[in-house]
Image (cartoon, rainbow, N blue to C red; front, side, top):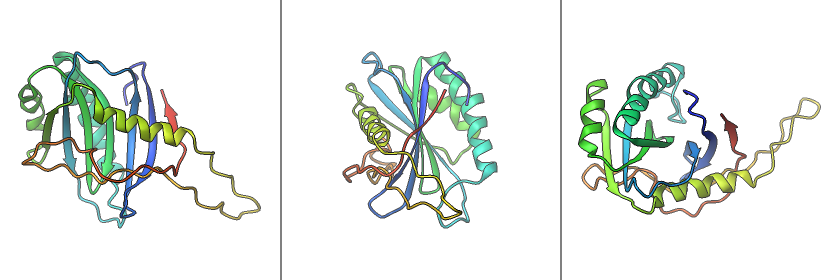
Length: 190
């Protein structure tokens, strides 16, 4: 990921059904002048039971983010705040004040299977939820290191709310119903 001078954290969480949800959350102050949330859903095919991406799919995500998303954010004054990997898709979260159709126009040529969702979120409530997950993860102890070749006990991870965007409702993808519970320590990356 390009270094934008902001602090990003990696958080592993689990939904109520036990499915993994991986988040990369940017640590920044909300910008009330950007009252609209926009989510890009980038599906991928997975043959793994976990429904997580392989190395080629991560490279594709990196290319989209670095060559399409970040330049569009800079040109149209949108803020990239988080990404989530869940249920065979990457979800990329942005906030801005401009017309979401301008983003769709820029991103659609990348892949016709991209999904786009936008909604009014003047209080950055969706981002506040993501920050709650991050704060819970920061409170967890670090994983114990293996001793004498034995694997350490498994640590709990934060519980992510079930979240699959509904195309007709045009709702952000991080909304869900489960109460967060700590399970993993966040990893910071600059």
